[in-house]
Image 1 (cartoon, rainbow, N blue to C red):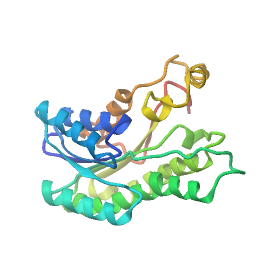
Image 2 (image 1 turned 180 degrees about the horizontal axis):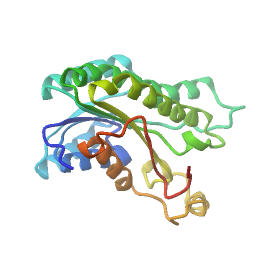
Image 3 (image 1 turned 45 degrees about the vertical axis):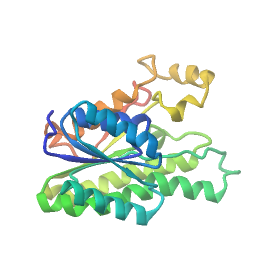
Image 4 (image 1 turned 30 degrees about the vertical axis):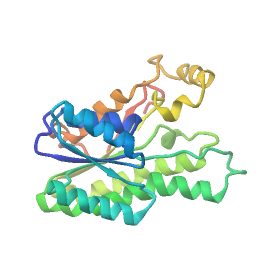
Length: 247
């Protein structure tokens, strides 16, 4: 699945799923524009990619800031000449029961997880339309499909990403641009390690494959959807959840 000649822009790339996706896309031949708030971790990622013979540039970015998205995408496009693979991965949680959830925590999660994806798509789409080739991949979640107590904001943002995915797929399909989502289940990342061992064991009991997933499992799905092998797949939600949710 060679991605040679393609330029991928990955948000939330400093750790977890985003970092692993960036490494996998670089391994498959894409040049990477990696964006996140943590500059130190971004530069470590760039060093790892370049040491392996790949090409990557770090772009410090808070996706909750619309002006930063516009300026960073503009800078990345100027440097690489185009962006034709977009991975909207940046995400946060602000968990609380809905009756106690602060409006600020609702707004922060929706802004970071959903609105930023719309803004990133808006900024890269002209480059994709111009060359009549593009891959937009949104990282959603199994909890955007089945809900989760204490995560009304997170679940709503991830469900929204699924709707956004399908709408964009219909808008740009005629220009040879695909838009798909990957819905991870329980994946071992810094975001899930804070949940504790007891929570993890309870989660594993709900997973037919009997284990939590790894970021590599998600990155493999992203790499496939970014490739020409997935050229006839669009508006699709690819579940990477070990069977936690079926159908």
